[in-house]
Image (tube, rainbow, N blue to C red; front, side, top):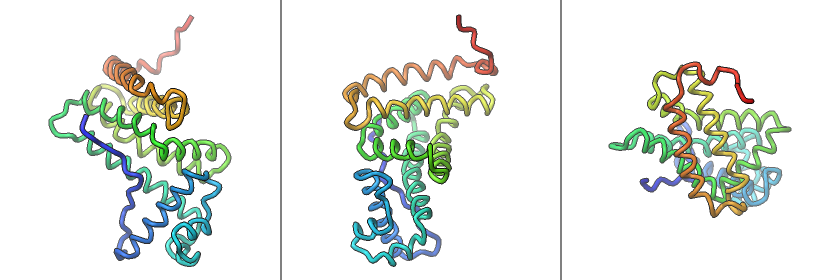
Amino acid sequence: MPEFIVPDLKVVPREGGYARGQDGVEQILRAALTILVEQGFGAVTMRAIAKACDMKLGNVTYYFPTRDELVRALFDAVISSYEESFEAISHEEGASIDARFENIVRLILEDITTKKTTRFFTEIWALANHDAFVSERMDELYRRARVVLNELIAEINPALPEEERETVALFISASLEGTTMFAGHDKPWRHRMDWLETIACRAYLPLIKSLKPGDIRKPSTGQ
């Protein structure tokens, strides 16, 4: 697999923005991400961010008038970094569809072992249960992350209808993300992540290839 690494953030330049302004936006968002990872979401306040950036509070609110706007921008910058890495893999020249799919799976699982990813996502999972704003942002984040999985599944099994393909992509995304609690950064099964990568690749590809339209809609026949 080529060396693909997900950057912490990908800050999309604002229309008509100046380079100096863009630098300020990125500095603020990186400070917010660091505080979230090291101290938790509750510590992400405008004052804490201003202190971390050695800025006046007014300078932070100039770029982001409200905390919600800042959080929205932070989530967007996080998911944009994944979109960029996923796109590079999914369009890798000369690689087979099986190889591109496996590389996406391996990248997701390897990224889960990083401190940033383990702590960022577990924080927002917990918050999403009680905070509608965070829940909406999380849903958007994962919806965008599943786009490439959807595209690859369509290439592997073109016969699958769109709704079924989306459901398979959701299942794969959910099962991959679920490993965070067991094999993420500082988790008990971190040392077995290589094994989990192999299991995932061997399980998902045959599943996708074997599905026929309507298969997943059939009721369970478990004994």
